[in-house]
Length: 155
Image (cartoon, rainbow, N blue to C red; front, side, top):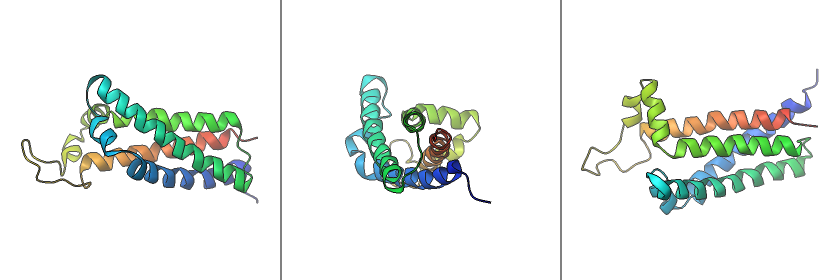
């Protein structure tokens, strides 16, 4: 039995989004945006919006390239819907307080704080924190959803 057009599209779009995510979140995002996107008020919202805009350009280019090069049957509506799912959920998590509140609601606040510097100290400046792991797994879960939304909108 042959795989459906949707299944093949999903199988191509998901790894494309995951690769684009890594590039956009770690190479394209500026240190300025990273340091400020979680702040309260307009400074935080503006820096998060700038990050998500550049992030979405990278994911859109990645999906657009595989769509064109591999001749995928993605519809424009499916493409836009998938990018919207990715962008909106990325912004939500990257405001930081939102994901911290979700972790607390799910009783994961201990994991969320794992590896974070102690108050008043800079004793663990690393990417190896619980907050980072929850952030990345949140993004991957929603990239899965974005790939699915992109795929079911195929021609």
